[in-house]
Length: 258
Ligand code: ZN
Ligand code: FE
Image (tube, rainbow, N blue to C red; front, side, top):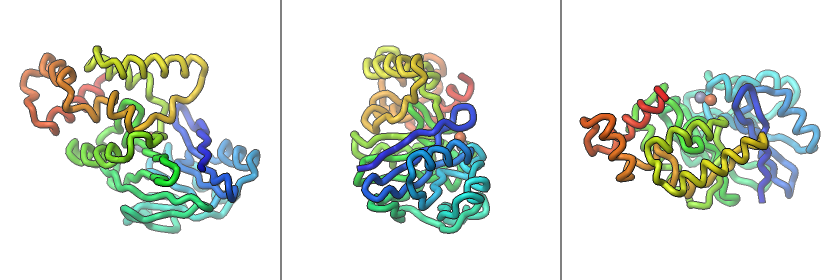
């Protein structure tokens, strides 16, 4: 069992309060603003044991200092990234496990958006927090890595079980799906996903979680094999070729300009 509470942050970010209902111990993923996170912790009377940032960007760690003034907890940073993560107390690497009560989070190293980006995967609960690497129907910008590195990172996430729930760092789903539909207008799963997302947004609700299976069926950054996507890319750029990395890079470049 696991409980995941999305907490809206800044303009379109999510922090997540992850609770082990057995012990009421908890962790916070991507604390950008301390006040709303601390309010949720008070309301639920849980004991936070760790801050788990996916990467060092301000909209994912900006709340650390204020948070740590109130609660002293472990702060995780990827190996060699301690100086980028405010309050870091523990360095982790691929495969390391972090205990939150009876829950275990496993670190998955997924660089490209930044060199130290990680996902936190809870294999027992079937939940993964993907930060700015895998979004609902999108992926993060390539600030500190190339297309090949991002593809490899996304492939690692795509290899998790299909029913794994995906919680990402931003509410970008609607816009991402509008872009995806330009490349695969006949993808049925994509159209259905877009309708579901529009209905959620109309009620002001978060569009997370997605699942790994849904992302494989709809996310253009996991669909370089799609004949329809490739045909539409070639219409825009006849030189795009058949190399998956070139196809991926083209989709990324088009999204950057969308
Ligand atoms: Zn970021
Ligand atoms: Fe971000």
